[in-house]
Image 1 (cartoon, rainbow, N blue to C red):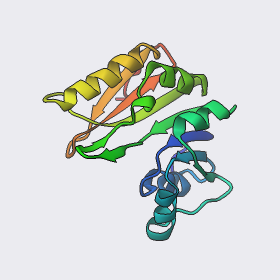
Image 2: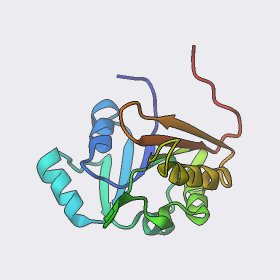
Image 3: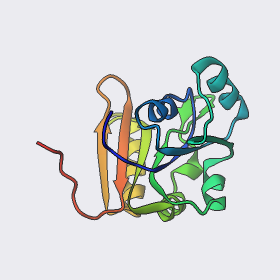
Image 4: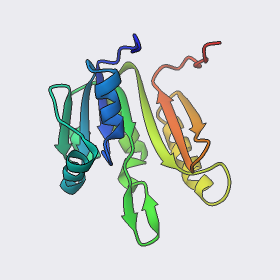
Amino acid sequence: RSRFVCPRVGSIGLGGGSTQRYFQYYYPDVNVDTAEIDPVVIQVAKKYFGVKESPTLRLHVSDGRVFLRRSEKKYDAIILDAYVSGRYGSFIPYHLATKEFFELANSHLTADGVLAYNVMGTFVAWRADILGAVYKTLKSVFPQVYLFPAIDSMNVVVIATKNPQLATLPA
């Protein structure tokens, strides 16, 4: 187990709850609040994927933006992994990719807080437009934004930090 301490995480989107189970297993002292708009997703995650609410994991049936607007909590990290499915596939809900939403999320982060967004996109082809738009919008709110493409999928994890200092990876 790591010595990393992140006492409070906000999460928007539950899916199968792998992120939430990861925190419960590796960082049992971290408090995770998850907003999931669809109560059926919560039921499925509990029944089929072993997600269990606890004093450190709370699930809220709520739209992520509404959840943050109604909350007064500050988080060390906010993780976004929210998608809606439509006729042409899955996509990021528009209201969770606006400057106003990112300003709201920023206001709920601690001084050194980070926002992590799992974006289905690539650096080429039409999904590059989605990734580019999210990046540009985040840069209008956060001083530093980093892109981490997945090796084996069309996902890019976008990390935005409140700290203006350029992050460096340990050697």
